[in-house]
Amino acid sequence: MTDHNQGCKITLYWLEQSRSHRILWLLEELELKYELKIFKRGADKLAPAALKEVHPLGKSPVITIEAPDSTKPLVLAESGAIVEYLVDHFGSARPSLVPQRYTPGKEGKVGGETEEWMRYRYFMHYAEGSLMPFLVMTLVNDSIRNAPPFFVRPITTIVASQVENQFLTRNVEGNLAFLEDQLRTSPSGGDFICGQELTAADVLLSFPVIAVTMRVLKDKKNKDKFPLLVAYAKRLEGFDGYKRAVKKIEDIDGKFSASM
Image 1: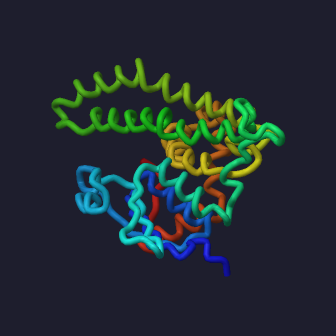
Image 2: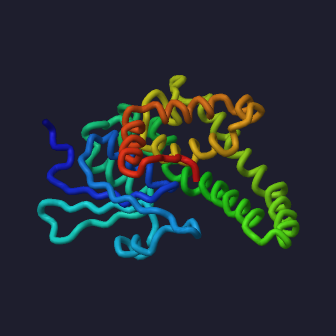
Image 3: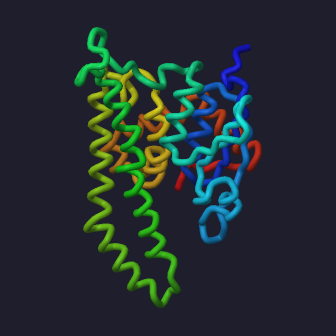
């Protein structure tokens, strides 16, 4: 049996209702062996202080990698950085997670990259840089609307509604329309964001796309408006690696939710 780990011990510090589930899915897709440590959010919905013992910011996802010839573990944070490191060093089981970079005969030339790779590079940054901030702001805005005591709530509801109507809704819907169009124009008529194959960019997009499907696209009107995006979310959830990741959490924690 191939040792895809190359002798390394990998540990994922997984936090409920967080972006860390993408890393768990990727570890499964790469056929890697790993240890899984699960953390729960507190009553304030924040990550527990114990995560700061792993990384100073106390956020998830975080992974540690202990190489055979290393004196101390490598600690990696930030979803995009973790994904890139894993596919760079442990991608042998799924090399298609990174598209071919250059068109034959144009290696190393400016503009010689394939459309699939250009999309891949873009969406590896887009998922966290453009899409997630608006979804997080939506969550925070809902907290402002619902969290205060009942006698203050009418005021916070007005403020939250103004932010939603004047800023959030149009930006969220703009991003959903953009993704719908990107899926419609996927290279070679592919079912994924970069073409015909699942890539690491799809893995990074999975959390916001599945979360927004559950949150924004749950009613029929929005489903009809973004049919390709709805189908894309279901397609991602249908991967065996994704299902194994979900089952692993269910077996340990008793339940799993992909929502924010």
